[in-house]
Amino acid sequence: MVSHKVLEFGDDGYILPPQARAPRSLRKRRIYEKKLCAIDLLATVAGTLLLEGESSVNAGGENCVVVQNTVKKEFHAEENALSGPPSPFDNGKCGFSSVITTNPNHLLVVSDKVDKEVVEGFSKVRNFRKDLNPGVNVKPDVVASIGSNSSTEVRACGSGSPNDSRDDDVHLFTRNDNDDDDDENFSGYIRPRLTRPVPRIGDRRIRKILASRHWKGGNTDAKPWYCSKRSYYTHNHQRSYPIKKRKYFDSISDSNSDDYRLQGKTHKGNRTITSMKSRNASFVSRDHHVRLRIKSFRVPELFIEIPETATVGSLKRMVMEAVTTILGDGLRVGLMVQGKKVRDDSKTLLQTGISEENTHLDSLGFSLEPSLGTTSQPLLSSYLSENACDDLMLCRDNVLVDPNHDDSTPSPSESFGKLGSTDDSRALVPIASSALLAPRTPNRKFKRTEQQQAAHRRIRRPFSVTEVEALVQAVENLGTGRWRDVKVHAFVDADHRTYVDLKDKWKTLVHTARISPQQRRGEPVPQELLDRVLKAHAYWSQHLMHQLQIEPPPSSQV
DNA sequence: ATTAGGG
DNA sequence: CCCTAAT
Image 1 (cartoon, rainbow, N blue to C red):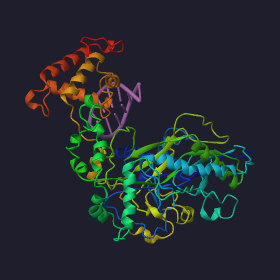
Image 2: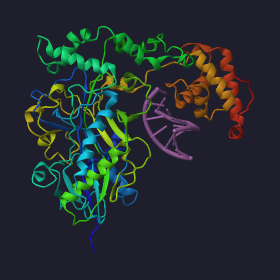
Image 3: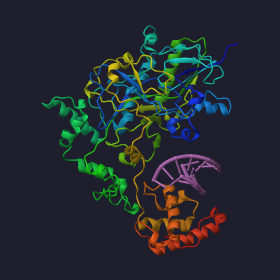
């Protein structure tokens, strides 16, 4: 019979030696440390966070460096082993590893309007697909799971356990292997191009930034802006946005109003930036912009079943087919910062941890996610894993690339040869020229600065008396175990107050109410409210059972 | 996604 | 506020 094997692209099966296993305390770090499953085949759109303090790397723009921002995988495979036989289809979440290239010949995507550009880029892929020869023999005897680390290897893995037999490695998608077959158009990377130097983006700020680049370029001081970012910032930044910066910061501070009751009422020019004053005052007061450029993305997790006897070319076609299907189902953009998904669209970049200051942001990832459960019928023989949520990824780095080269440089595939497959520790994989590596700071991925810590943490926003009042009222009515409802009933418009926040606040309120007034800090809460807190707390402690019932408890109405 | 609690 | 475990 035909043997069933699992072919893996990437280093999903990478396993750390036992002695390298981190202590339990360390192992439960962040999500992005979990597992870099999937594949990062395909495509690269290029992303860069242009932040202050970064040294420019792309001197010439003709070479390419791939940075595998592959954070630790937390030895996921090993843990899998403990919990039963690993399924080739159960690869867990995909990490936001990054493929970074200084080669600017990618689709340039900027800011939050990325999806459009990307889709545009990929539409070409779809067209390309039409040219594919459908005559592929699809007898699903082999399961190929495509990993996510730009690996160019295909491994046979017997039972599907990522760590067995690696002997019969086969190289796929490498530059060399790719040159001679009929699939040369598909090199594992999609190379959409811009039709115009400046991407059409909805974000005025970004547009201005881009415009400023050109302005800078035309200046007699013809030094490329990206050659000295710091100098650019200090000397030219201000001049670049003399006028509308006010508006800009006003708008990003929308969600900063401390009193949710004011939300929506202050939208017409009466916005406040005061709430930013505490910790992040400096951020707001200065003219900070985040320069963001997504430079590459990938399809992290994709499974393909194909007979062992199928040709490499057919496998490639199948991958292409799967990818185009994914892309055809509509996409939405996801954002991940510091390993955490950012769902709250109302958050400012600052609150999210994306700031000019925060140059060393470890993992800022943009992902293209299925827009919604839709048509997407699994392909005949390939499909995305359930956890392909983090799917198409847009990665970012701090490499600066001349935007004007977007349409005039060598194709990425030229540079992307075989990547450093299963290497979790190395951050840099020289492709064309190691010289380019020099200016690049070594792997600082695992060292998070105070800055980052601060940025990662949400800004502190003390509850106003008004909010406390609303919270008390809501809890009186709903009880202490329905924070979601409390949120919905009393804090709908307060995007910055999550139900967890409300729960926490109630916790502290109860505590505050119990301690002596002298020990209390911050804006004093009226004793009347604290009394109600105690009362409500006591009541709901007694009526836990009823809490599951309806909601008409003791107190009055709103 | 929510809830409950510890940090 | 953050982080986790447990739902």
